[in-house]
Length: 74
Image (tube, rainbow, N blue to C red; front, top):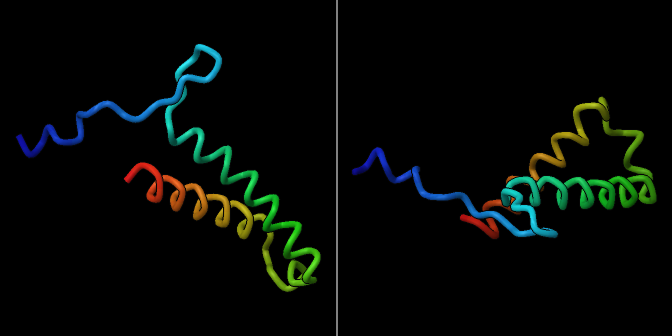
């Protein structure tokens, strides 16, 4: 029975008649929050100090997505 604990249904949302998994919603919200972080870092002039940006922003988005998942669905 211990091996079957992960077989429960994943949370999903009905959006306009189509069901979407909760992790997809977390990723979309995290990308929006990452854009907000980008604006904040640009206004504070911290962004030029962060190198390489191609790794920084996906890492921020992943951290936010994982955090949202743990906060709402854990």
